[in-house]
Image (cartoon, rainbow, N blue to C red; front, side, top):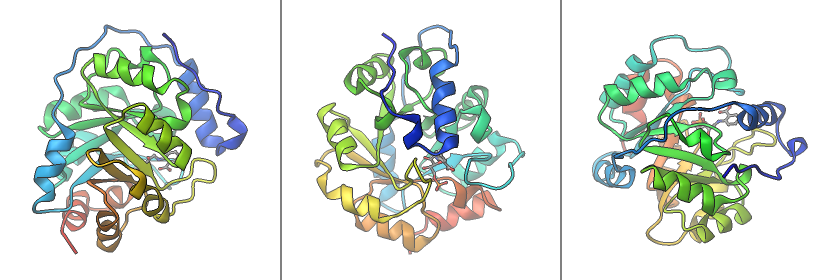
Length: 255
Ligand SMILES: O=C(O)c1ccccc1NCC(=O)[C@H](O)[C@H](O)COP(=O)(O)O
């Protein structure tokens, strides 16, 4: 089964349209994986008793970041864990985020927390060859969400389904997603509004692990997302900018 979406490139920021086009075209080959994942929901629960449960993101660059961070991503990942990160996210998209699947594999070997593969997965074949504890499916880009979700689960992955609108959230719920991320970043204008999470979170059923994604830069932002119901916060730019361990320490400390 190969899965493509009907999303119009003209509705997306140019960088996102280009990433989506290459995700659809990138040839992927490799053996089917069978993952024994570290549990993301359990880890967020445990860490959330004492600290802000943060999924810290190894994100060397991005369409909205100036410059590229070139230090060893494995060293950065270890600093994130030392700083109190509950879990990690590793960008594997190469052209706009400076990521790679090799980096993900090295990071996952070097730490013992759950690791999310952050990429634009739109076809089942992209789920092969690379192990991770969690994979991301962006609802907007996946037409047949239940089928791709099942394909990921069949390989052992936990699945974070990302949404940005009410209708995408409905699709995620209908597909029985158990981990849902509400992305505060709009992929058309790349603008970030924390109100997005606050607006959608009340419609997420009990029992779903709910992640607030993007735009958290201060302890006050983190507290705001927790108050609105986030079980975990996905934070990239604010951690990658400067001293990664100190930034993680600050953002995982309750305000
Ligand atoms: O971060 C970007 O510039 C970006 C641009 C286009 C599509 C996706 C993008 N980011 C992906 C993410 O989901 C974020 O890296 C993640 O949520 C962390 O966000 P932040 O803390 O705001 O860096």
